[in-house]
Length: 250
Image 1 (spheres, rainbow, N blue to C red):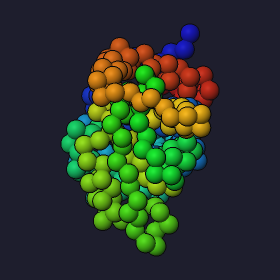
Image 2: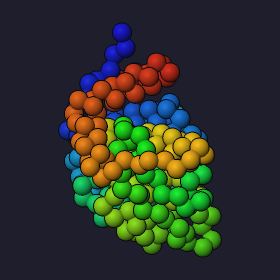
Image 3: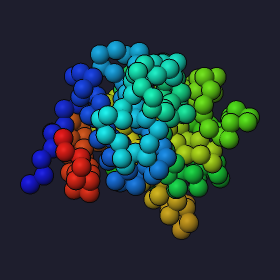
């Protein structure tokens, strides 16, 4: 039997937040949502004005020693020679504007990029993806000369303002950014947004999809965000990551 910690919701201290950050990286890499690029972060429960994020490394290889502490201006607090992700400012700005957000994901799922190029709003078509019943905000206000990367404070703040109170936003030709009230919810949102985009893409190829209504979306979201559903999915994803990555031993 695989040994892993059961779902515990918000981390109680910085050590647990770092561990959850590692697990989120590994899970999202194992589930094919993150590849060599993309990144996640977790707010520091001991200091809400900093967050934890891996150094600039492929998510599949992240371990505890790779985690950096970063402030809400994107400055690296950790005394290190490691290089941080250039787009860490996305995370910093979101944490600054959204006190309810405890975890952030940014990645580049193929199906989401395909829909973004056509400016097709991503809306819930599958019951288990009901949390996206309201179309996500669309970002297409890139800073000239930055290669469509979000690396300046000015643009990071622009992304955060575009996000508003939504669960995430779609970025034209780039990917998406997703948030969560805890790490488990952020991971669920990232995986299910990718899945919903894939189903929506296939449905659009066949005809006009029937999207979830607002009532259906609210009801399914309540079910998916319950402690039982979050715990069930989180433990499943952790077990799959541990099976695929034997070095993940906590």
